[in-house]
Length: 178
Image (tube, rainbow, N blue to C red; front, side, top):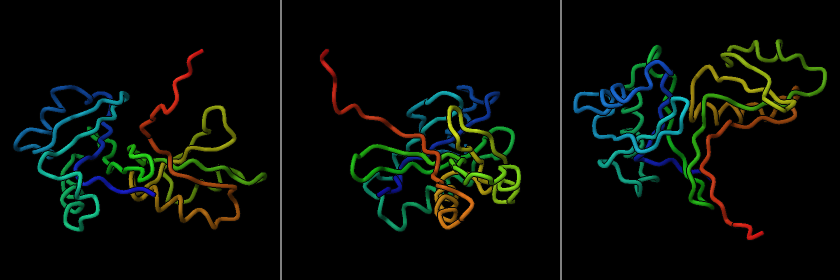
């Protein structure tokens, strides 16, 4: 089970704009993410932002998430920002997960990927590294649209399985001593 955090979001910047100056401009008092601060750099343009003005305890609050969504909508799309997405928390482990703008799809034998991914719900696809599955970009973007797309594909007879491509926090529960 996943819960949305009401105080965090992730932004993927295009490489040319993934600079400290751009991050400062985003979080400036008049910037689209005013009140947020960059708290983690995952590399490859992916950064986590947190707001002191929104409470992490408001994960279930009906009023908190619209404020986060409104902050995401102020971000410039296109040249600078590839996408913004909410941060989810795994209820069992307490770790975060971010649904990227991709779904991982394994097609049934004989289904041509060129035909399957010609669907306008997809914005492109490529073979997943070291796998017989495909990474497909979801046309509606990252976060909740990806979760909805993975769920919608479950009944499609042309696939074996589909799941969101998450960027996840990992925790080590065992440290070997050998």
